[in-house]
Image 1 (cartoon, rainbow, N blue to C red):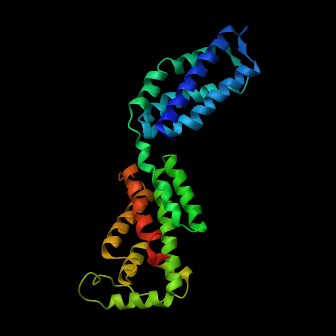
Image 2: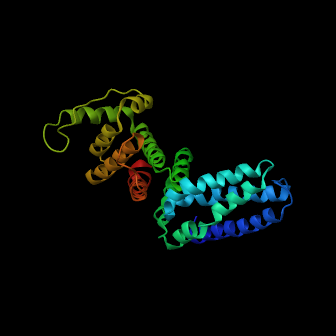
Length: 273
């Protein structure tokens, strides 16, 4: 969602809250049971949870959205689902409206549109197979919802799938041969590689060969060069950071860089067609 659309949604919520407040205030009795009023309250809360809160991290209001406004809109949603006290409606609407423009709308207007760093992520689909797109679309969905670690894991899984398919195409026996040759090297870049494989199927490859070792064999095989190996190794490291608890968080910039490198060095690589 771009900044202009988000601002429009926030303004609409604010206007609808004002209208809801007027309807509640003129309502007769201690309870709100009018269906139209309850439906309006439900629509307002739903718009917050579906269209505004998911954008909070990208536009600088995540902390307050996750605490104060999440609870208030959750309360409004709960009120809309059953006959509720008029006074509770009034207090909830007043609590939301009191600083809504200042704490939400103003912060979005002032923010840089950070989500633009994700603008090119969907390009990764251009050269993906249908099977890969299943992973990649989930990765894109996670990114848009700010689940950056999950997105990093999924995009790496799709990349490794392409690598495995390439090995299958070129021959498992050839992969074995390359690993056995590498193990004999005593000088240079490959001297520390001390593994050799006798795989018989792609299943063996998927279960037995670590992604780190896979990258080394692919470089020796001339399917990627040393620089591509180093960059993909960084992506793999970020994947590991994302998959395990720790302080090395995945940022938007990390994820955008990983998507770019994986697209260029794996999905667009003619050696992996």
